[in-house]
Image 1: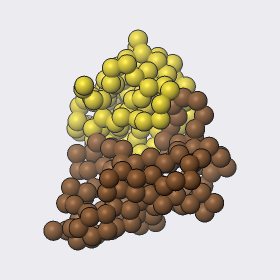
Image 2: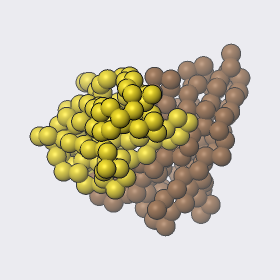
Image 3: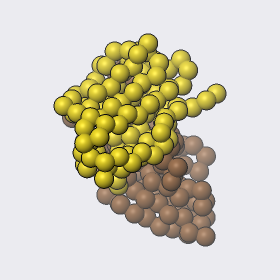
Image 4: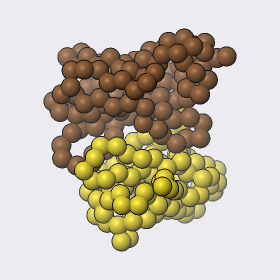
Length: 113
Length: 116
């Protein structure tokens, strides 16, 4: 069974440019999470989806970040415009709605120059 | 809000030794899960072990065991017979336990190095 897939693995952009990250969860997992992991820190939740509905987006900086999960499967996280402080690893995870275990993807490492 | 604190930024031991990683947390919830996750250089978070707060018995998974002290809000991880492949970042994490999936609240992590 395939795990959580994320792309790209690495992205380098200049500040003020837009960037997008893509996540494909494990088949059948209706809950999807985006976490932000700053260097040397633990991940922090940005947004959680139940199917296509965002049920927890309180930590998502909505002035520059947006996310969508069309048809309740794949998800895209976008930053526009990117700032130097956005350099971090963006992790996607998925789970069944009824269970505790989250399965993580390999993350996208973003560098903003 | 819940907080998780790992007070050991880095630890290093020799292969085959036993090592204990510390974690404390703060919550007003009575029903929750605690986890230890491993993050190797590949960045993929891997679940190591889980503890349910209502269970008094400490969880064990092969060489990994926990010491769960609910009253003290302490949750340490013991790795026995450490192996080179155990080298990684280790994160302690908290999850509330209502029905259904919830977010994980992570600590800052401990970088563990196993030396040959």
